[in-house]
Every structure is written in C-alpha cells, then in structure tokens.
Length: 594
Image 1 (spheres, rainbow, N blue to C red):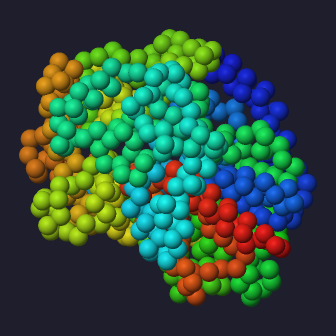
Image 2 (spheres, rainbow, N blue to C red; image 1 turned 30 degrees about the vertical axis):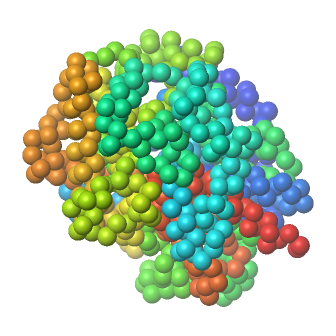
Image 3 (cartoon, one colour; image 1 turned 45 degrees about the vertical axis):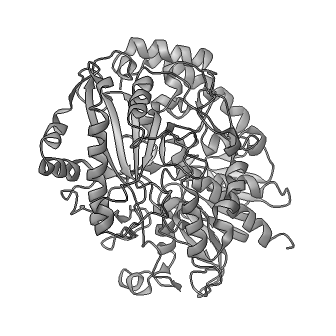
C-alpha cells in the first residue's frame, strides 16, 4: 500500500504531541515504575485487560498495574484511521504476534497465520472493528455449560450495554431503519456506530437481498439476540476514529487515575508462587529485553488477560497444565490442569473475489498516493470521507437449511435454531492484496458456529523458552460438518452474485475462483487451498462449571476470550468486552470487604 510520507509524518507529530498529555501513568521502562507491589497485576492490555483495569481502579484504594508486551497505541496513524486496518495485521506488521499454525491436513497442509494484536489495545487495536454479540442462545448455552445463570443472555445484556456507547456515524446520515435503538447502550465506554461513508455497492447488496427474501431476509439489528438475516454492520468507530480498548477504557480521564499504572514493551514469562512448592500465585515475571528478568507482586490477584494463545502459554510456563507433558519438557508442574491450552475453537474464513466495473473502490487510494494524500487530508481535517469505515457495511448471518443433507447427516453444533452457522461479509471493492486490475469486491464467508473443540496451544517441546512462540493447531475442517457448511456458504454467494442487479458491475471472478464455479471438485479444492483462520480463537483456558473442585488456581483469575467454552456466532470482540465487564464485577465482589 502506498502512503504519502509527508502527510503521515505530520499526523504522527500531532498524535505524539497529544500523547504527552495523556501518558503520565504509561511507562516504557520498568526502572521508571514507582512501585513493585500492587493490589492487582493485569497481564495483557487488550480487549479484556483494559476493561478490568478501568473498573478496578474505580476504587481509588486499589492499585493496579497493567503489563503489555507491545508498545503504546498512541501516535500510530494506522491504528487511528479505520480504513488502514489492513496494514496492522499484515504479515510484516510490527504490531502483531507472528503466530502460525501447524500444517493443517484438511487445508492442503498449509500453515495460515493467526495474528493477534501486540500493542496497547491488543487485537481491538488491529482488527476490523466489527461489533457482533452473537445470539442469545450462545449465552444461554454458556450458562448451561457452567451452571452459572450469570452468563445467560438476560444476565449478560446489561454488561453489553455497560460497555457500549452508541454513536452517530461519521457522515451523520439518517440511521432510521438500520438498527434497533432499544438494543444498545448509550452511556457506556466503547463507541459503536453504523457505516460512516456510502459506497455504491451498498445499494446493490440491498437490492439483491430484497429480491431473495427467503434466503437473505432483512434483520434490523443482528445484535438484538436473533442475528439471522442480512443487515447493516456495527463497528467500534467513534467520529471517524477506531475506538479500541486503549482509546476507550484508557481515555485521558481514566489513565490519569493515580492508582493505575501501565507498563508497555514488557513480555510476561511466568506467574510465580508465593513460596517454593506453594500453589498460591502472587508474582509476575517479565522482561523487556528477553535477558533481564523482573518481578512485580500482586497482594490481591493476578489477572491473566493475555488472550487465547498467550494466556495458556503463560500458565504452562508457570507449571499449570498437564503434569505429564510439563515434566517431559523440563518444567516443574505445580497444578495439574490437563485442559490448559486444549479445546481451542476457531472459525474458518474464505475470501471469494470478483473483478468489478467501478472506480469507487479502496484501490482509488490504496494504489494512488495522490488520492491517498487527498483522502488523508480530508480525514485529518474533518474525520470524514472514505477512510472512516472498515472493510464492509453489510453482513448476512445464515443457517444451513433445516431440510439439508448436512443437518440430516451431522448433529447441529449451533446453540439453537436462532443461531447462525455462516457469516457472509460483503466488503467494499478492493484489490489491496491482489495484482492491480479493475476493482474487486471481496466477499468473506466463515462458519460462525464452529463448535468442535479440536484446536490447541502447547509449548515448543524442542525449545520451551518462554520467549519462543507456542505450537498452535486450529484444527481447520477437522470435522466434516465445517467443511460441508463452507461448501454451502460459497454456493450461496455464487447464487447471490448471479442476481440480475450485478449485470454490468461484476466482470469476472478472480482467476483462482474460476475452477470453483465449474465443478464441485473444483469448489472443494478451492476451499481447501484458500481457507484461513478467522482470528477468533477461544476456549484454551475454559471456565470450569460452577462449584467444581478442579480448574481453580488461587491468586490467579483468567479474564479474556480464552475462558469462553464455545466460540460465539460472530466476531469475538463484543462478547469479550461483556465477559470482562462481568469478570471485573466478580473481582470487585470478591474483595469488597477485604
């Protein structure tokens, strides 16, 4: 992607000058920390960790330290501008963990990446900002699995509302009929809004869906508990800016709290017990140069919020996991919890692309430095224009038909009849990752209810150093249901784009997609050769049932996406925000009278 260097430098300077006013309690050097003992130490300044930090420091008597492996988000232009999100999780991005997976035997033995955010804000600072809660049935299943009705939809909805601050879109257009106001929070912390820039493809998608109401029914608001249908996307964008957890939960009025400290560029290696042989954990070990080790102490709790990959890695490094495996690689087991790092659930993602006859596309600025400079200048001056939106404005959540051979052959893994199996994202015309030809609308499909607990995160047994990346297996298409559902999803998109409204707009499919249109064998080969991870892993530190005698470690609490027992039917950012809000309340309740 070409960027006008001068404009970037000017905007970066502006951002850094603002940063100086709001980083009084952000530290980049451990030597500058004013103390080494806190009431709470939070490992990970991302989707969940900053929620917990914000809520715990509402009690001014409690001191909190957040330790983040990546840098501050301040002054990073690509993190501010929604349309530049793709650069943040690109393979060469300095702001992601370079995680890869083991060869996936059901995906042509390829090793697709699974990048996670490595800066303050975590993956909320690099993702495409889609805000999807999932279905009410997803949460009722959480409650059933844990024996805790507090995780049910009715009990969790107040936490979604507590997190959310509904915000008008950047272009201030009339949003009547595009969402249900009653389903949204107005006074929360994280901004959520509808698309803030109109692309011509919007009308084409809407017209097509209207002509096929049985297969693509309109849903007013997919975040109201019953998401099935096609509707307008909701994203965490605030007045043309990305609203990551760092920008919302660490806004100036929060980071300035005297009892909140944030240390960046510090990677945690282990949590340590209070004394040798103890299973009560009170210390966090970390390094800023992978050589010198430092420790800080938590007098109340350590909160692990490092995410679905790093959290189990830290637990395993600390001797919490499968004792047999830990002994084999030379780590002294302290707590035998074989489920740590197991039961990962991830969603497969497939892009399908057509060349389009239009100049109204992302490529107008992605491949044209002059146009990029114009659009950036507009964004910098008014925070409007094509750069204020993320990848798409419409999305369809669908189920495999009840009379299909798929559901007659395989058990339905969805949480219930109102829970989708498929998400179809209709993205803007773009050729960001392709050879420059006429614009390409990229349409993504992924299975949203991938509930087969087949993935894992384990330590590298050849060299289990805490500074090495773990071994990750996402189990793509390990279950035939997933693969057959993807086949159905792609056929639905082919049918969608065969509608007459696309005549003259769509020119031809991308070369790699041609065989998929010609035969079932070609389609299946295309899917296996192009599917990737959707970057929504959960389950690797799953919650144990309420009252269980196992799955507990004193001194440590895990609050992040790794605790979700199943992946929700959609993107995982919004559910993680809500889980973190409730998690913070649970911590507060524990220590209310101590």
